Length: 578
Image (cartoon, rainbow, N blue to C red; front, side):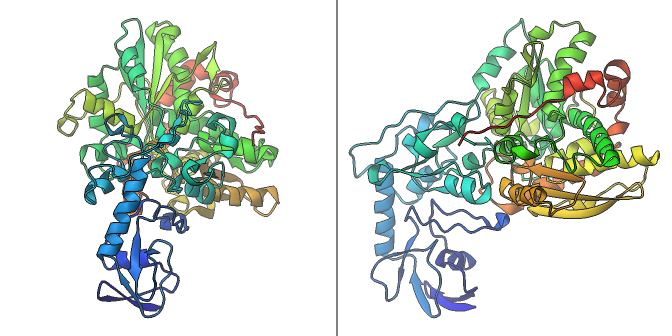
């Protein structure tokens, strides 16, 4: 332990701590832009690129960046001297001098840390007017927009992409005035190994990275009398949407969300949890088949498009392992344009499917050519949780005062198993609940597989399924996925099933969710809400869902049968982009 003094207050901290960490323990706020709290990822953020956090250290002539300066025994630090404050203001003014004055139209407006910091530090005019850098927008994909004109070289996105996700496509490019964070050779994201997980967007303090918004297109579809527009909502959305309206993290707003969607004018409001139950029927059947044959193990869940693209680039030699089942929202889209169209007598070409997702990779996924049928994409538009909140606000809907409403029938009833898809470990647990009943031929009373739950990046467990010991693993974040997949590639890990989610903590912490700034307590509250909703459901196993039973009886036949394989399964490909 190290003893030091900050602003006259004595404190003792661990030997590897920074001045910034020590100051936080005393409740002293030091402004930062490049620093991120990466404790929940088991990482440290010591980039020190913005120099906003400089402080005075006794015996040192120059100012020290507190976020990357380690503490020393007997160190005396002052964070509030006029020298430090003036230096911070100068650095901030220099950053602002090369930043577009587009706050009114910026996607990050009101959520911008640079904007907030300028106000806190009393910067109301640009002192250093001069040349500004200009770069073309990267709008090469329909998930993430890159605007390098707004890049402040904080390098948070680089840290997230390289250190946490290990995708490694973002790094510092250029020098001096022309320095930005970008892919090699300035390539557009569509020509890189980007997985579109959106974690870079979730940590960008300004508007240099933002989601590709399709809200205007969705408004046009809703107001087109020739179209029948349905909407579906992912399980993670209902435990985060309320935050955009001042409600506490972890507040379950399922009924209010459904009511708001009806008020927005959608023709039908369905639950992606229903499709999660459908996914379990398909993935569960695959798991049973593979375990019995001993082939293509471990089966890997395929619900997360971010990790699927990561896999296609980084581990093409293991393409036989992922389940071929489409992700839940794609399944619902396929069912809407076949099963629902038949029942309601609607031309499937007039049906528009809108998915509300916690994820930006779902925007990319919806455009994958193999996720279509008869020339129609399964899903037409994907809105993030943030985009849905913006539409509700734009329409002037008093969200917190809405009376709860139910999802529409046919594709609106779900079980607790469908709900827990939102959290890391949930997909695997949902599959185990059904597989155990199928293999035992019983309705087993104990089906909470708590060993696979939690926020730890890698979890391994042996669970008893119908008297059979099944070895499983769960990972969240692509960096942790890499660790496990490398072991599988080398034959060092013997498991039968593996769940991977690209975002740390799972979909509850997706790139399209309300910003958490890596606050673990918010993620934990969302996770707790998911399991509360699961526990409160009258049915908690996917194969018990009466609407799922009916669709197999009336339309699909059997899980992994000819019809379901045609509509509900997909394929993967090796991708070679550098």
